[in-house]
Length: 232
Image 1 (tube, rainbow, N blue to C red):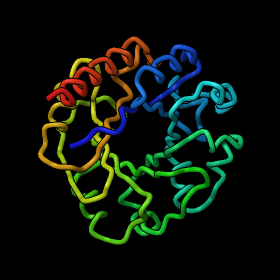
Image 2 (tube, helix red, strand yellow):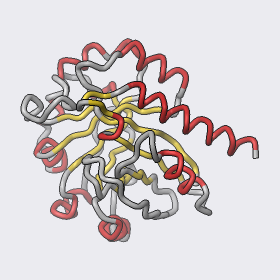
Image 3 (spheres, rainbow, N blue to C red):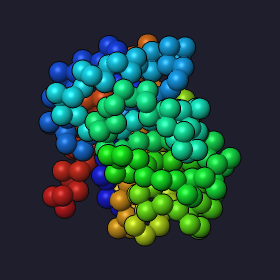
């Protein structure tokens, strides 16, 4: 299979944006996710004040917006109060992710309308079976799927590979510096021409803050593997 992105979810208020920008330039395949919630003040360090978005425009980052809980439900239900949290900064994001109980919103997800500026909408799927079920029916062409049994908790879950022609699939679940090499090699060595990305959150944090040393370690590991693959 073919890797498209390595996503680090959870830019926070202590993230060094200058260093993040340097990492982005050195590793173009990196993507940085921002968690979006109505209750960001109560949800912990990894949920930043949305006003931080005004500081991001000049850094040239590859960004994704991860709508969580009721904010994700409101996007699915076409109640765009959730998008308003971003203070008109939706254009900063190439992708957005909907973190919700997808099984409860299958019908509405199948009829989801495109969002302005957003090229790709990711739906978090907690089981392989649910994702396979969803792929069997009508679905938006701009939609992709993140297989994440961990749900952002950092629990190391076995990779279950799913391939479907033309579908962009993401893999998460306890990925971090200590195991990204084995996880990525497993995916790259699978005999398929499909495209995928990997996503990590908890295991690239220290004391709940995004740890750019861990992020850089992961990126270096991924680049080494990709360079090896190209030279074969």
